[in-house]
Image (cartoon, rainbow, N blue to C red):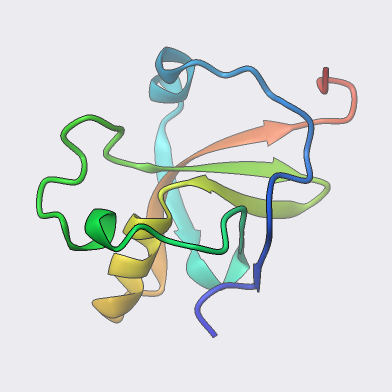
Length: 102
């Protein structure tokens, strides 16, 4: 199993982070088997595109909510890492708390 679970949608409240706010978070390693996806489908073109980061962040985006790690953006990066037999992914991680939820 690559991921902890394949989810459908985001079970956490909106966090309101902008691209600039995500970019301010330092990337860290996250184990693939600890991630719950928020998408159950992948655009194959994104996986196969050599230049898939041209318009986006170099790192995946992960939201921690109620002690679960949700892969919000970067499913293609996670699958590419798994295809290269890596069990970790570099991601920007945002911890969302009950008090900070809007």
